[in-house]
Length: 431
Image (cartoon, rainbow, N blue to C red; front, side):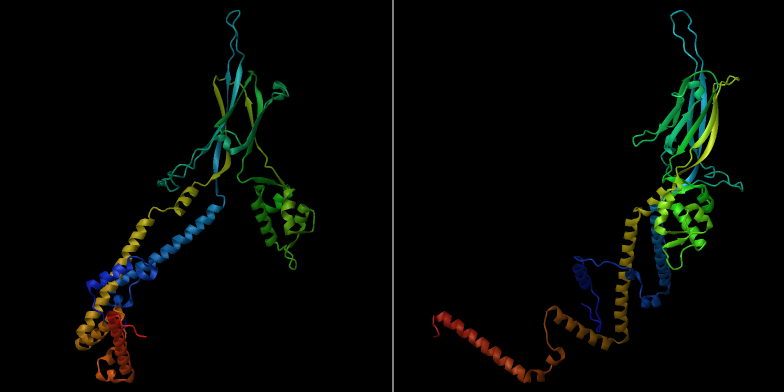
């Protein structure tokens, strides 16, 4: 046990006893336990480099924690990037066969139309930059390949009604909850004449996008967007043009343009979603025209390509989520922190020993006297003894009235105890 007022002689027995006491309940370490005391830094100036590293580590931990929180907030929002989807529209003709002899069945000429597509990856990854130097690509786990049909909500192929009639000129595909994705669509029909066809592709936006009324689109400067983005753009317009009522903040004073859009001079904020609902429509489908005709040059396959912009999940989202939930180095960091705690504890123990021997070297006589007093007090504390140590060393202490009375009481108690033992042994009963 160590007293603040008196010196202590460090010994192996004391350290072993302290370790045994501390084993059942291990104190939780804090950042302050990593710090080196100013006295040690004065003795060892080189230890300031450790304190600088500790301050840098604290700043780095704060930065990483802040970035993780920012990434967690970013992961809650839908993250989309624009990619280019290349659509291939091709057709082939299958020649018919006349029956070679009577009784054989011939085949009529047919054509086959195929609509396929794939994503065109960015050419900037790992390619040559504008300065002509090669930029190495960052290794990343490839995202699962998306099927062509996953980009669309519906596909309609409209053939020439004059050739195939009103009941057989439409080929339709619509997404359902049980739809199996495919890499392309194909249509076969008999015929060898040129056929005009129109392909209607309706993109499957996630989240859903809406087409704005022409007047509203002109005011906000956007043609199609998600509902939250439209409301945000409208609020920015209201705030920029100071249309919010200065007295009733829940009311908007429409300007000339908004009055033409919403057909009212004033409206409440809670009415905006309902009024917007009437001005939002489903986006227009992509319209591609194609002519199915036999190539006079003899080519078996005729292909046309179209590039459109689509939105896909940001590939960085996986890396961001992996960074937030990464636990690979947690145990290593905890082990290194524990080593730092142990080293700092050892340094503090060495500092205590050094102070002990320095005081002994400077004032040996006074040090030994204080040390004996401290050890005596520690011994009494450990044996649960109480009393006045310095006063008990002098004879006057035992001539006090309370001391004599205590002695008389003690002797009387002992006499009564012996008397009871004798009476019990002789069988005498005191009535």
